Amino acid sequence: MQKTVAILLLLLNSMISFSQSKLSPEQRIDTLFSGYNSETPGVSVAVVKDGAIIFQKGYGMANLEYNIPITPQTIFHVASVSKQFTAFSIYLLENQGKISFDDDIRKYIPEVPNFGKPITIKHLLYHTSGLKDQWALLTLAGWRMDDIITTEQILKLVSQQKELNFPTGTQFKYSNTGFTLLAEIVKRVSGKTFAEFTEENIFEPLGMNSSKFYDDHEKIVKNRAYSYGQENGVLKKRILSYSNVGATSLFTTIEDLAKWTKNFENPIVGDSELIKKFNEIAKLDNGEPATLAVIDGETIYHAKGQFFRNYRGLPLFNHTGGDAGYKTYLARFPDKKFSVIALSNDESFSSLKSGLEIAEFYLKDDLKPKIEDKNQNGKDNPIKEFNSNLTEFEGEYYSPELTTTYNIKIRENKLIMSHRKLSDIALTQIGGNNFLGTNTFSFEMEFLRTNEKVVGFEISNFGAKKVAFNKVTGQNNNLINENDLGVQLVKEQLIAYNSRNLEAFILPYSESVEISNFPNEINGKGIEFLKKNYEKLFSDSPNLHCEVLNRIVLGNTVIDHEKVGGVKNLEPFEAIAIYKIENSKISKVYFIRKNK
Image: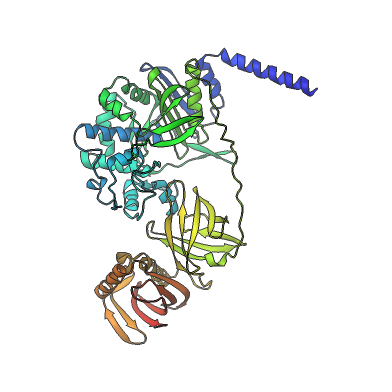
């Protein structure tokens, strides 16, 4: 009986395969997207051959609330497919003699920190700068991806960075930050907004009349698709609030992108020499190619906002995109003058898989057989949980790079990481000091120790490595109201003290603050006295650290038992610090130092 069933199934599969082989490529695309209907989001598809659209069609709905269907004219946010336009804009400026690829980016954006070796425009184009990814940093700093995120906020975050992921030019690592900076360079060099520059220099000449970079999330985009995702089988809206450009934020249509692909074959914007250079594979400083991965025996290289590979024997430039429920794909097979474009508002849309399937419908006779990668078994290594005493990890931790704080406490025998803007994060211990967690993106963290005592942690996710957090308090007294104004002021100056941020340190103090050794030996008065003394302390003591061992609040007075270390020429010591709060500022501070 089992043999009979197996034979029937084999025959059925053969019949299905035979019937599908008789379908035209257009019919096979219809079959591929037959699951989209008037109750679902969907996809807009275009196939381009020899510069002309040979197939275009919309499936599903652009707006489920108003029953608006997707058409070839529907406008989509294309996410990272935007990057090739940013890179091309840089190439246009270089071609005009206004910049050099070897320019130090601090020539145009001086607020980027000096990390030693210059980061050049070329490094940003090649994803070899070492700069930490903006989305990785923002989420670690407590942002949600549906928050309003502006270019200005990203630049401020970049300006606070202390270290790179790796020495500039030595590795390839995808970084959205680099392309935001490239767009900012275009803006500052051209004297126009990035949206204006691309409209005048790319979209208008190519007749891409439905394309625009949106640097303001409140701007109206007529005929746009809205994005959706499923939660427990129920469709929900996804929120896009980006007000930043370069890495993302191009809104366009399949018809406009078809005109863009044609420009690579018959240039209107740029010339054949510029196109040739633009398509060249990116390289590390040592001349080795910038490599993303090796899949099915094919090496995937980066090429300035595009990825290049020989896909089953045919050269292929392509890139995917994904933001807030939008999923996109743009592919060019230059030898065949053939392109595929797929833009979707369905979070679960497999853009790369679907795009390549569409290409195969048309190019099957030109493609070599697939080579499956035998090393890809699809099995994840199981996480081995490690149980130990968790109390030593409790406390408050602050990052000067991200200007944000996490509280870590034990709850139901589990370490819980909390942030005032986020849902609580359960941490899984995988080693003595190592934990895993998820905050939009998965992360790994390692607690750091000095003389066996936990003093901070380093946290890493997909795009930011070893972001440092300093421990600023131990376990808080449960009777303390953490929202008390006095407590907040004291905490603010303590966080700034540990990060040696003078401007933030003096902010909670009154202009006439008195600093005394208890009970009445006045050391000095006024904000200028405070500034002068702590400026020297911060400069002389790079390892300065203060931990609150205990805290008491009595009315308008906060009393901290502190342990101070890292002061130049001094051994660690303990002290009692008494802060008096008046008129919403710290007006008086008394110190009682122990262990002199």
